[in-house]
Image: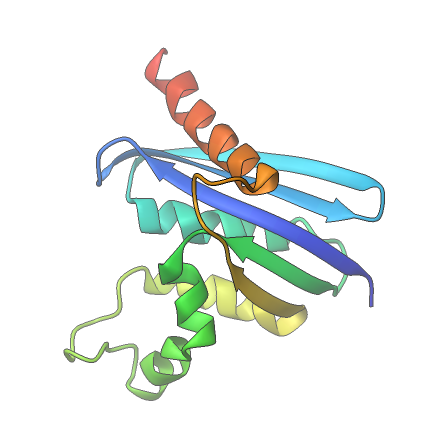
Amino acid sequence: MPGVVIYTDGACSGNPGPGGWGAVLMFGRHRRELSGYEADTTNNRMELLAAISALEALKQPCLVDLYSDSAYLVNAWQRRWLDGWQRNGWKNAKKQPVENQDLWQRLLALAQRHRVVWHKVKGHADNPYNNRCDELAVAEVKKHQNN
């Protein structure tokens, strides 16, 4: 199984508001950048969509190290929130429906195809790949605001 390193980030101008996401995928010497936009969204949705889009871009099952500055994204895996949400019929600890369930379910399906290790990185710090993802996400928002 090939090993891939992925960095992701999401951005929103207002929350909710127009949002963008960015991802950098690295495999050996190869590097690919992805980004996208949604007109009316939230920061958390953009964080999830960045990871989804990056994993969807992989052509075969891979060993993935996925880095994100989103505690929401990474903690759902590391702290096993997803297990509890599924066990409780997609209800959170307050017995309310889990937000972004549609995206979590897409992400779960992708995580079953790949072997993903989730890593939390500090946002807006000295990590060049995380910073590049942020640039891509913010650029998507700016590009569409100028239309």
